[in-house]
Length: 317
Ligand code: 3HC
Image (tube, rainbow, N blue to C red):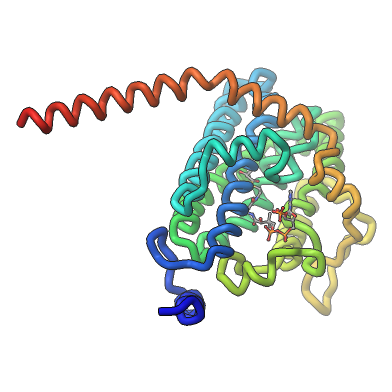
């Protein structure tokens, strides 16, 4: 079968919602864009551990510490699922890490903002994990099998992440005026960067059209962003805090919230490495990678020893 026929048959599978599995034929670009997106998704998970990890030793109670610890550990697990999913496409884990540490690979812009108060732990759970859920639920129906299946497990854990964040915000907003002001400050700082998580406007998105054709994306960046705003606006009202956007208002005609212009200059600045914490995040990840080399070497040595042992044993039988 020539490449044209293979591509036609591949697109027919996508259009009939037949999952693509690792051993199936796929266009090189389908493979490359998945390694790109899944690799960056995995990087986002492990870099995303850093802003919250900063508050594990500062949590206000044992209960909060336990919940935050569990959340940060979950993110590490999400990263591992996703690196493994990228490896089913031929992605090389060491190479992906090299690209992360060199600044070549992207990760979600949101993690380049500092976490200044405990309320930020609430805002991250409520807004950042809320945005991640908005984006990851459709990915459970992604055309590539291993990615879709990884997302099903990830989404179950994300809903715990969002609920514990919203509960932190609820307690703060019902607390003292200072606690409520802390929650409002966290919303002020995390609102716009959370909207940026969905990517550039559709008109500037390089990958959306092709990713939708290939069933990688089920919705566009702007569609998911709108769903997120429509979900969060009433929740902010319920908390009694104000979304920092004077143009936010319910549109009875479209049955959606209209909202203000996002600062895309700030977005691209952060994506290009010039955000408040980009350098710290990459330095922390590089340090962890270097200090963890002995663990990887020990695990490899142990695996090789086991391999030799089982080969010798099978020969003796
Ligand atoms: N941060 C950094 N880079 C971003 C970005 C963001 N928020 N949004 C877009 N970009 C980059 C894209 O990677 C692409 O650059 P590249 O070609 O060098 O990869 C460029 O900007 C153009 O954007 P596109 O919209 O064309 O790119 P995509 O089609 O890949 O869409 C995306 C971007 C919506 C983030 C998509 O990649 C995606 O859905 N990724 C999977 C989900 C994900 O990564 N979420 C990140 C958060 S994970 C998280 O929050 C964990 C939670 O547990 C806390």
